[in-house]
Amino acid sequence: MQKNLGWLVVVCFSVFAILSLIVHGITGYDPIRASLSTYATGPRGWIEETGFFLSLIGQVSLTIGLFMALPHTKPILAGIISYCVSSIGVLLVVLFPSSTFVDRPTDGLHWLGAFMTFAAFPLMALLISLAIRSIPEWQTTAPIAILFVSLNITIVVLFAIMYFASLPGKFVAEKVDVIFTTAWQITMGYQLAKHSLASNKPLASASVH
Image (cartoon, rainbow, N blue to C red; front, side, top):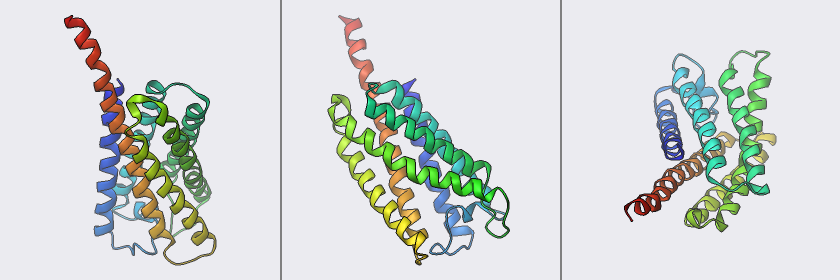
């Protein structure tokens, strides 16, 4: 099951990345001034909304997979709880897309979901990335995970400063951040699938002997 969850994570976030690239080319929005939520509006908004939905499936799958594969230490459990908060945030973003052009009462729920995701994801990724350094099967993945989460945290801080200061280019920082978070999740999903495959090998060998 862990293997299947791992590959599902890889597929979901890979397709999310592809769909996000597609909407940048066909919607006509200015990538410097338009947030990702803006791409989910208009006649082609369903493309980005599909990507958001797939990212939600990917997050839930990775949450379950990491819970099954990793030891239940306090840092890892805290990370998984933070990931659940991040997933709830994505769910709010999916259920209540930003109106962009017309203010709606539900816009507050959309921005709440976005804030939950931006705040909870770095904490989760940092806790889990540091924790897997002591797990033999995950040690080769740890440096890559730590690199991506370090870049993620740097960009989140930069985005927050630019957002509250109303500086131009803040949504470029947002998109760069999504690149790093997507890369982290694909990396972890691949490792989850690979670790599951590797963990089956000793059992197969034992059955032969």
